[in-house]
Length: 374
Image 1 (cartoon, helix red, strand yellow):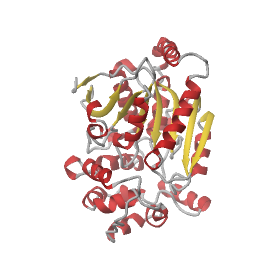
Image 2: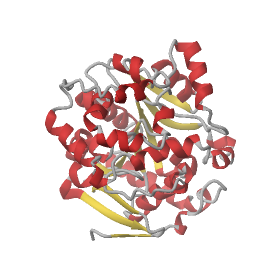
Image 3: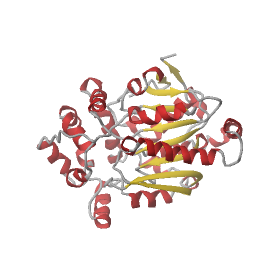
Image 4: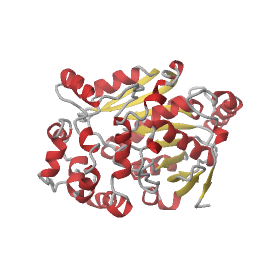
């Protein structure tokens, strides 16, 4: 939630569609590049608090939006706005409004990073996937088939919790039993996911038992849990908006758009970093690496011994790994950082009109926004 993640740097922007987006915006120093941080479920820009301070202190620009359904951003009740293509267009509109010509894209458990590249590949110089790697287009999404295949390959299904998240009662249960929600989402040991998160029906049983572990991991102190509960309180919309991402995917609302993604956009020569998490039983490292290899011709992989919330559990390690990757590719031409960024921006902008016309994504000039905080 931008207003809590970095209160002095939060923005509220109204897009031409009428949708309001909250975000953290910190401008770079000396024309250094921006880093775009995209969060996953159930989270918000507050998920990036350790990275926002670290990279902005180094002089990088930071742009961390609350994605649709989360934090300070609107939370539509209908599923249509939660199409991946539509939400990608929203991100481009936000970047355009804030005059961010390009950025290093960093996503945690966020399928949107790959879809943003499909539609606006000129906007991202490098891509960083934390925990959950690149996900190829789904012409038809079948959660039961995925569970069947991962059961056979890894010994347990990975998406058993999806049916619960797709149920009409999930939002109310997760909000009303917020202590149980934080216990399953931020466990001391991720072994609990094997029992209650991965198997179909498991998370429903978890809530039926009203399990509340009481213990918190040392990387998620009580003060931060209190902020998390505030972000997902009933007064702020609870979990309903975030769950609509899952409902839209399970309804196959993205199928037509996914089929329309050009084959030549399904791979990239841009540098890609994947950070895997050994103790995440959903984002299984071997599976994440294999799927990301389908996309990235220039792939680097870092394996970390942690659970799902890598940027919270190991913030210093993640910051240094991402910093090293960014600087390696930023300085590889030998040019000073600010000159390299300016040169790349000019080159990309000169091709902007041509790049933005392919069918999956409209021209950038079609978007408009105004900033309610200006």
